[in-house]
Each structure stands twice: as C-alpha cells, then as structure tokens.
Length: 390
Image (cartoon, rainbow, N blue to C red; front, side):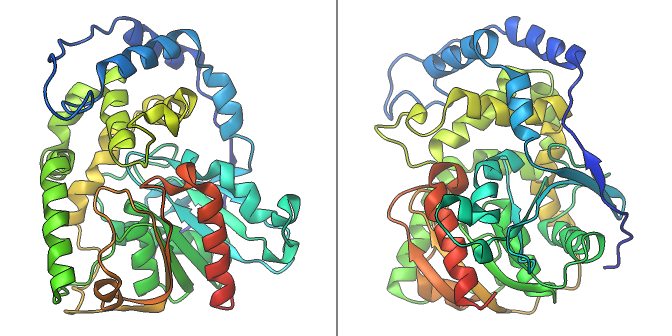
C-alpha cells in the first residue's frame, strides 16, 4: 500500500469554550436511570456502578478542570501529518540518545493517546530518572484514525490498514529507517501487523495478543483449557464487541448525544479490564484521569468513528490474505499482565504465531498497562529493546 504523506505540522489542543459549555449543559441535564436493587455479582454486575457514576458526574460538574487537562495534553510536542486521506495526530518527543531509537506506542479502545503521556519522558529521557541517556527513545504516540485528534476515515478500516498508515508516518513523514512498535488492545493488532509486514519494524512489544495467525488453534490440554476460559470470558464481557462490530451506527445515535452515556460505556471497561483493589476503580484511576480520557472522545466527536474499527476488522482486508499459520518472524516481546478481557494464551500457543524473544509474567496489572503499571511497562520495553540490539 503506497500512501502519499505530507510534512508534519505543529498541533496544539485548544477546544473552544462553546464546545465545553455544550458538553457541560448536557451533563447537567442528565437524568440517572433506575438501578436494580441487589442481585449477584456486586455493584458493577449490571454495568457502570450508579454510585460511582453519580460521584463522577458531580466531580465533572464541580471539580474537573478541562483547561488543566488540556495543558497536560499539550506538554509534549504534537503534530499532524496527512497520510493517504487521513490526518494523523501524534506526539513526537525526541530522546536524549543522539542516535535516534524510534518507538511508536499505539493505544486502543476505549483509550486514547493520553494513556501514554506520563511515560513519554521516562522513555525519551531516562537519565532524568536515574537511567542512561543512550537508552532514550524517540517516542511517537499517535491517535488512531477516527480517534481523538486524528482525522476520521470515510468508512471502517482495519488495524492492518492503520499499520500501513503508521509505517508511512514513521518512515516517510518522519524519515526513520528502523523502529520498534508497542501496543495493547487495538494497538497490539496494529503493532503486530507492523511486525508482520513493515520492513522498517525491527521488533514488536505487546501487552495483549491482538494479532493472530489464521489456522493456529489449541493443541495441548493446557491450550484447550485456556480456549474454554477465554470463550467464557468473552461470552460474559463481549457484548460491546458484538454491537460495535455489527451495528456501531445504532449505538452512536444514543451515545453521541449523551456525554454521561459515553462516560459510562468507557468507564465500565476500565473497571472490568483492570487489576483493582477490592473492585474499586478509584484504587487505580483518578476521576480526573477517567474524565480526561472521556473528554478526548467528546471534544473531538469521535465516539462514533472510534467504534468503526470493530466493523473494519471484518470488512477491510487491508491487503492479500495471510497464509495459514503465518508467523511474525521479527522479535516479539510479551508483557503478560494478568487481568484482561482475553488474557494471553499459553506461551506455546503464542510462539506458533510469533517469534517470542522475551516473555515477562508481570504478576499484577491489567489491560491499560501504561496507566496501571507504568514502571513495569517502561522497564520491559527498555529490556526488550536492549535484548534485540536496538
């Protein structure tokens, strides 16, 4: 796929006050739904917990400061570059190492580039935190097409197509000839495709298995037991996936009109996919973090287009069919955090799909690794890069 690219243009997040006021008015007008009394499974069993949502709404109205959050989003250099027909928004923080070591960090749904901002400085300038300058990366953090401050595709596209756009951004718009790709959620699928198809990708670091080889299935008793557990997890928690991959537009009519609805849809996933203490979402995430991420969807009007990626997975092939049991031969690092929608399969099953050069069982942490366990993620990325001689 050959994509035309433009030179990067500086970008600053600056949301008009009128847009913020419109969101605030809809939050103020929200009427809480009836809530079931009791029932098995705890206060989140029926969906986003009503007590937490009431507290979040109160904080949204009386404590959350978007302008402060906006300043945080702007603390690193940001740009947009036209790649094909889409403007790609990205952070680009050049590292302390005089020899560029580019690292692209790709988010997923329901996250945003905000997930990575608090680890950018550590990765780019490790000498500021007790490390060595020569270990610094040039850190690139894009917003996925249809998400945040990137442009919106005209139709659903797939992770494979996004990978082609990101490779063009890195190699042609930014001029890098080698890079490492890291990601979780959709970012793991995008990073996997970069490792499989992009010659400039030197290695891939994943905290979720989003790229899967066709025809690779469970073979051992351990792998079959995992497949049964994974299927049960998806049956219990995969309703959002089925809706977003089949009828995303219907969902969007409701949630594009309801900031609180968007918040509930997103916050529930942060609760369900994270390694929490005593089931309390506030044990890991502050309300300011939750609302900053939610507001990125709201101020850009991208909730609808963010869900298109689920439909695009099935209707945008993005290239020639992948052969049965194809394998990523570039070195792959696995950061296995234990709590996720679908945890990693046994290593034996992963290794039939990719060249696992490093595998780390983290022992704690969940789906949103950069927010939950930033030190562990940063250390593992750095160790993986050293291990493959990057």
